[in-house]
Image 1 (cartoon, rainbow, N blue to C red):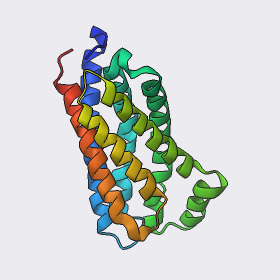
Image 2 (cartoon, rainbow, N blue to C red; image 1 turned 90 degrees about the horizontal axis):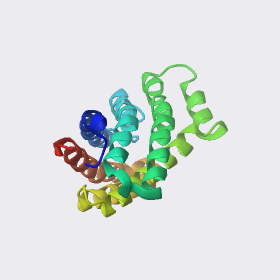
Image 3 (spheres, rainbow, N blue to C red; image 1 turned 120 degrees about the vertical axis):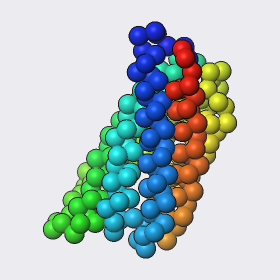
Length: 196
């Protein structure tokens, strides 16, 4: 890892956050398979994705720092889009919770976040593209596993497709979360295990 000595510990902790993010996404993907309407009828998948997205923003900062100078413009843009997208996507993912709980007017707020003020699709798109750019940068970095970057790139490309597909293709979301999550966990482990 090529980071300043004062940043080694926070970056290593960020590696653990990246592993937790990956585990939460994988769990969310598996929980979606148990739901007849793609997870929007249950609190557990929404909460799992929400927590994963909350952890993703600081985890992506550690990932970007671990890339060091090899990140280039792709890494910088990937970090920016990924972190901001995690916030936008996470804010909208939180809306799954009142939907699942049957809160009055939750559907109206959901439609507002999807169409009127499209926080959800824009945030999700930024998150997916940012993650793919970071995966691409990881493929070219000498300090992180190339195959992990490929898994992230493929997994998040599939997640992008699954996001805009009808709920009856929920299995694609699960596959994308498992593939991308494996890549994230591998990168997180590499960051955690490197001593500096």
